[in-house]
Length: 501
Image (cartoon, rainbow, N blue to C red; front, side):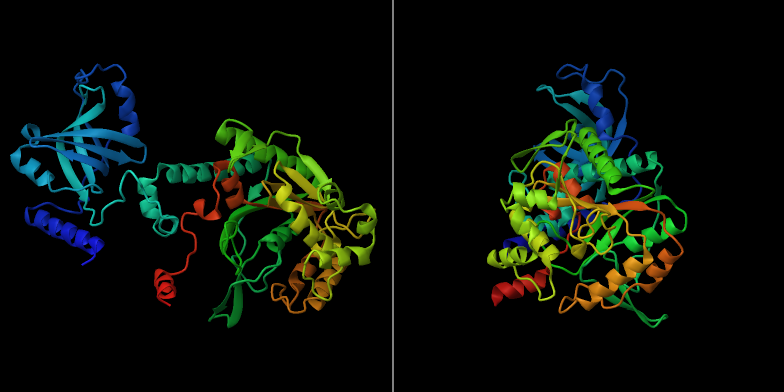
């Protein structure tokens, strides 16, 4: 029998013996009146070996994280969502029968305690138990407290254990909740309205990505988990909602990496009568102010690299970035054939129908992107790779679009919206005609979206921000899996089979 199975057997046998002694292993009657956090300040004025003068009785509940048992007493560390406190379990207070039963309890058990406060002779605030209640018996041991849950795969797969034993993980996800709340607060204070749009769509649009496909029996039709909410949010601009936002999941049937998960959280927002420059200003203010509120500073460290989020942030056109950072001369960028040749020289694989705009974008991703550490807005994206963005009025080969890069990765994408239905239809048709073998471009255009534009959409700007990547940045998390509670992983059975093969 393996060590793990032997431990599980021992715990189950212990649980059975406790049940035979009349212990309710899964009680549902204990209701704690207090949290650990509210007890901790009450010890500030107590001297070692001094009890709280009022003799007030408190009741708390939580998980036993450590236990030291002696002949007639025991010390435990109890943890609830607010903190940890020591328990002092004494035989002559609980009674011999209860104490002897308690000695069979384990680290990991969830218990309820009623008692008074005092400080031990070494000055540690403790609850002297008057009554104890088993709330939930733990049948599996927690990881060793000195080493924690060290296997990264197990941390992601068994997040429930990770949260029990890794305070840093708990803090990361508390920060995630705070960051999302602050994003909502910021947009609400700027007169944006939060909305919900379909997760299942008949035509996947708003981005270029391979969708997940499903089928609806009653409607007798294929549906797709959305890759973006963009086209629905812009329909709301047509309908007269002038400032809208949505924070929700997108789904893309793509690879896994430290930056990508098949389902991820996005913020998308749209503002009528605004341009991409307005959103650059809004984004700079929103992200920097949220960083200040979450971390108390705009200067942070991300994986050992110092990053300064204090405004103003740098702005470069794509051509300027290729010249300034990649060292490509202006004459090459102005010559379509030279740009295509340079991309080929750098080992970039382009489809036959790809033009210079696609080549520039690929060169940027290869030679520039990872070098953009401090916040940098890259503007003037080629029209060829921006089918939903408004053409620049002075140079129609580029669009009024930006992407925000921090620590070498894209955090946001925004642009002045294309609201000309004829131009939009032509771009959709060209995108599909040039699709080739690219199965990330859906072979059917969204005719209803074009129809919506024909009713008239106000001039507007829109943007998407990756919430998971924003949380990664502000919590110094190296992988997107560190900021998603339950990231997607290969099934354990498949991993085991691969090992055996």
